Amino acid sequence: MLAATAFTTAALPLLWAGTASATPAGACQSATVQYRVVDADGNTVGADWTSQGGFRQWDSAPGTVEVRLAPGQTVGDGCKYPVSLAEYTTEGPNWQTSGHQTLVDKATVYLTAADVADAGNEKRDWQKLSVKTPDCYGQIDLYGDDITYDGKQEEGHGPAPYQPGGAGGGRV
Image (cartoon, rainbow, N blue to C red; front, top):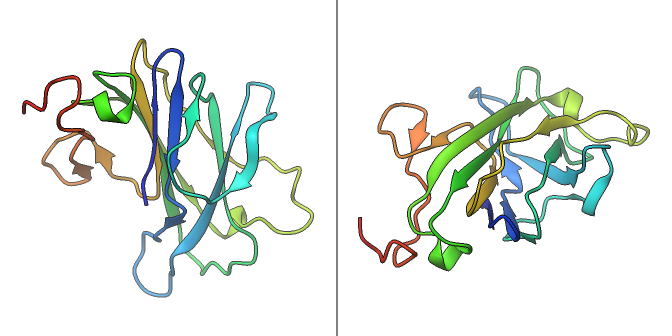
């Protein structure tokens, strides 16, 4: 599942991948990642912790996204789970008209056994992700890997998001 947030300077969506795969091979399993959006003062904006995927629409770009591993999971020694937040400029104000997208900023953190939510750690600081906000139309994606989706062909990179038939008329 991929989390994508599309927004204009006035409307913003967010999609999320609820699982991440560990980076080393071997005893590491998939893990459920939870996230929430917080404001500059650390107060939760909207719903509290969730691993629900899908598209979210916001009135403005979220400032910071906190991430953690869901409670009750066992994480093996040396296992780390990448979670990335990426911001793209788009050609239109929503997914249907977003057209070609260009990576502007990306942040990645690696969750470990220390990031599993358990009883008694509700007040702790969780890992945080933030990216620049677009000047006009944009999309923010939250996803469970460390690939940079910018259209480059080299290792560690993948295709940039693109909605054919968007504002660019579907031209490649």
